[in-house]
Image (cartoon, rainbow, N blue to C red; front, side, top):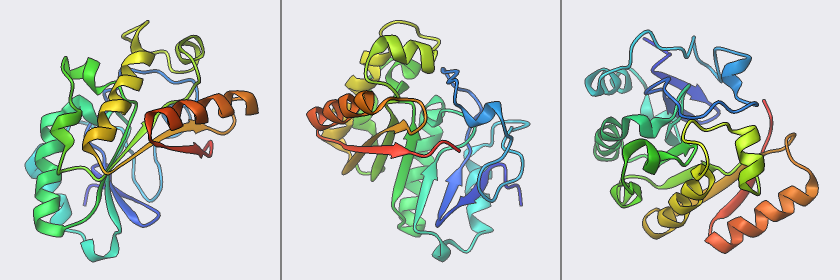
Length: 201
């Protein structure tokens, strides 16, 4: 069993599709560790094929898990086609809720609006809002796409509300002031999503 492809966190089974990411967040776990939850090393020697991921699911007792989460040491929408194919497989074979943890820059990564493609496949999209404005975003997230990335992330979040049952935007609890968190909460409310302050790990 290759736990770098599938790994457990709490009551979920997580899919590590890629190590590619358009961001270099100052608080990223990749800066300080090579594993999360009950996993082996999450740095992939090669990106797994769809067939390899599906074979890993077959080795698990899927009845143990409450959800399947696309989130590893990379941005899952870097492999959107594979993500959609695996999500469809999971829905049909196991009937589990599916969540994507994303930096929200999938539109820029793929060169098109991708939220409509998630309809019927994804139950929850969790987006890293991280900051209340673009200047702070550039400092904390350091996206390779540069200026405009923050607005692209917000646009993706607004689109997801139309196509996905639950949309969550999050910030990290040690990186913002209470005033900044309050501003983030206002932004999330205006989008029609749920705000979460996630612990720094």
